[in-house]
Length: 183
Picture 1 (tube, rainbow, N blue to C red):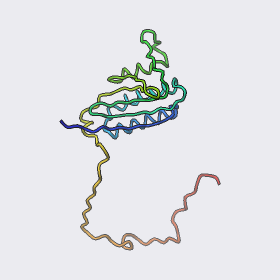
Picture 2 (spheres, rainbow, N blue to C red; picture 1 turned 45 degrees about the horizontal axis):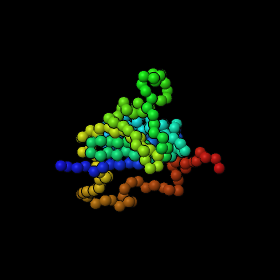
Picture 3 (cartoon, helix red, strand yellow; picture 1 turned 30 degrees about the vertical axis):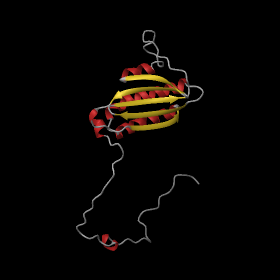
Picture 4 (spheres, helix red, strand yellow; picture 1 turned 180 degrees about the vertical axis):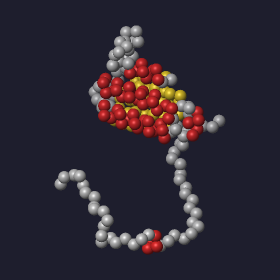
């Protein structure tokens, strides 16, 4: 059996509206790096919904940790916050179809393979998982590859004076750059 190592990324933040978009971009970039492009939209939507819940409902503060982990063929995205109260999923029968809030966890459930919540020593963790394409899991480097460069020199390098035409540094051709900042 061939085993593939775990890949893990953690971001700590205050779940403020300005930060949620930044974390969505971080998650997207990390999934691109892991060659999991087909999961970007669903993972970005899910993490946005979970962070929005922290922003709207978590007490006493909005501090949280987002973790994404690729283990074998499963991507798990989790958000840990300091509020011990567990989320409540709105019932579909009683929900307004045009409501602009209250559907976040239902959306997470709809785009993910599985999701859940578990109490934590300092609050709770809400998570969801997505199946990872097998080809992408195998193609993902466990760590950045070591770069090796082979240089073949066929002709000797020319000396600096031979490279180009002579430049008179006492007469610059272009005006110096100026700052747009006053002062």
